[in-house]
Image (cartoon, rainbow, N blue to C red; front, side):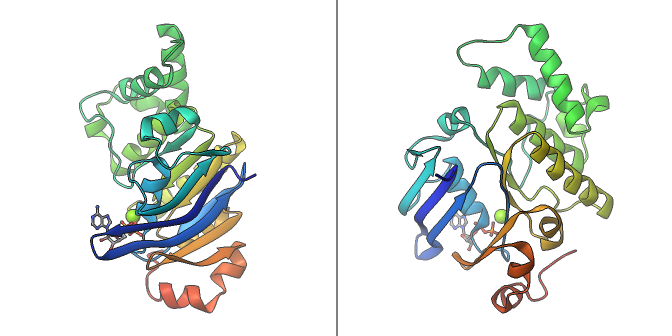
Length: 243
Ligand code: ADP
Ligand code: MG
């Protein structure tokens, strides 16, 4: 049984069909990349998988449970975590306090001691390379740092599966290299990852499998070399990759 499944998921915004019967399955410990031109429905799909949006049709399954109508908080507690394309930590809290909020939020029933929570928060910040910025306010961080804080926040809920939305976008080539290393590190932690990147160069280096959306439909799903060599994918992407 797959860890996460989308079965015939469709989404209409008024007259616009943003997703058309999307069927996909993510297996445990896979790192799957989601690609597609701007407006192809990638973020909408993640919003449906994470519970921010209800699909117009179809179902979402996670760990053998139908979660189509489960809200985002409950999904996060089931182990389905996510980051946002636009990082949105609490701007006026320090990086450390942001992560502490995530840890507190996770532990509804049994709160770890405040010393344990703090140690865990510091460790998470180190994991994402923000150990030296723990006391900076989130709004003082650069774009790349804010994205890493967002990742630490997502990790603080101890997800089984992480939905990552464009971690590498807007970063310098060096920042992108770091993101590629992060993907490797996340996988070493045993996480299952479903990641959107606008640039297929980033995902081609790390993913086990690539899924390509075009105008709300899946047009390819397979090994990276096979997918990137497919004429349908090059046609959808012509001139789109930004490095
Ligand atoms: P991507 O992330 O692949 O760039 P999106 O999922 O953001 O694409 O958008 C897919 C399509 O759905 C686009 O045409 C977009 O304009 C539209 N769309 C996304 N969210 C909404 C919304 N909340 N209301 C109306 N249209 C939306
Ligand atoms: Mg998007």
